[in-house]
Image (cartoon, rainbow, N blue to C red; front, side):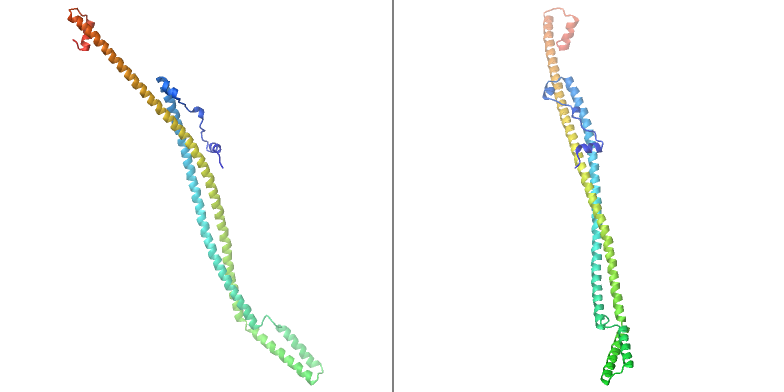
Length: 307
C-alpha cells in the first residue's frame, strides 16, 4: 500500500508546510488596526492563491493517475476478452478432438472385431502350418506305417492343408481391414491436430490471463496513488478555502471600519456645520445690531446662507 510520503517523493509534489499558513484570531479581527488588517488580508490572499495553485497541481496529477488507472483497466479488459475468445476456441477444438477420438475408437473397435471375424490374430501362422505339413509329409514318406496310422496321418495332412488354404484366403482378403485401419489412423491423426491446437490456444489464453492479472494489479497500484493524491488535493484545497474564508472576514471587517470612519467623518462634518451655523447666527445678530463686519465675517454669513 503506497503512502502519502511516497507519492509526494515519486511525483515531486511540493509538500504543504503548515508554518507558511496564515492564522487569524478573533482578537486580531476585532481589535486589529486597519493597517494591520490590510496587511493580514494581503497575507491571507497570497497564501490562498499559493494553496489554490498547489491544489490545482495536485488535482491535475490525480486526474492523470485516474486516467492511467482507466487505461490499465481497459488493457486488462482487452486481455480478458482475448482470453475468453481463446478459451472458446480451446473448447471448440476440445469438442472436435473428443468427437474424433470417439470416432477413431469406434473404428479401431471395428478393426478388432473384423480381425476376430477373420481370425487373423488367433491360431497358427501360415509358416507354422507349412512347416507342420512338411513334417507330416516327411513322416509319410520315410516311416513304415500300418493302414490305420497311415490313414490318420493323411487326415492330419489334409486338415492342415485345409487350414492353410483358409488362412491364405483370409490374408489375401484383408483390403477391407487395411482400409478400415487407414481410416481409423487418419481420424486419430486429425484428433491429434486438434489436441495440438488445444495446447497452443490454451497457452496463449494463459498468457492473456497472466497479462490481465498484471494489468489489474497495476491499475490497483495506480488507483492507490490517485487516492493518496486526492487526499493531498483535499488537504491543500481545504487550507485554501480556510484562508479564503478568513480573507473574506477581514475584508468584511475592513468595510465595517470604513463605514464607521465614514459615519464618524459625517458626524464631524455635521457638527462642524452646526458650529459654523451658530457662529454665523451670532455674527448676523451683531450685523443687525449695527456692528461693522469684516470680510471674514461676511464670508461666514455667505457660506451659511444668511447673507
